[in-house]
Image (cartoon, rainbow, N blue to C red):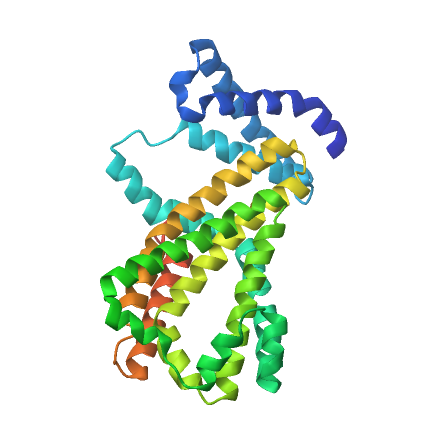
Length: 323
């Protein structure tokens, strides 16, 4: 059977299953008894269709479409109805890291959209600091502070670390939300947020390297930078998912594709919230402290390794016992 004929014959049932899943978004109680019976029948048929698609045309977009449809049906039918505490634990221990791994390509794209402008700005500013104002308008005062060796972050110690930490968390959350929400504008605003922050990092780092201030700068940035930047990349990747769903909805309608991508993106953003708290605490209490650079680098390495281990390994199914 050809893929087009397969899709034509089955599409009506898939769309009906999608409609029932939309209605059951708040719980299966929203469906009538007849609709519940129909949902079960259509779900079983969709799993069978997925098996056929994987066998006969695994590289065709219909396979990815059915995989998403079946996964959504499974989540609706077998949704955990236990206590909220258990649901929260399941989200942290499994749902968030699994969602990250399923969508890591978008996070990588966000990372590159930050890294490439940062590298370009670093090289340009290191060679000629006067270019900083062209790359990042209004950066003249910042470059002057770096040239004079002013460690502006030490004001955190004077103003109170608890208050500064709360302010930092608020700012970081704002950046993450803007990177996420920018996806609704076909991802353009998300790309702007990533590129702008990359340019800013590159300009500051390039000027610091040029004026012999790099050790001071990285002594402040290193401890919290790994977690903070990781969150920005994950949130940016979530925004890019929304933009891609609008640009390339595939077999879905544009609205349905946006809804599906939005569910994954929101999971990623929610998972980033506690990471932003961790980054804010580190930035408010450890980064501006008098700890030696080696200790701050150890915090960076430890937090980065812990985060990477969590994202890559948490929530994986245990291996079957050896025979």
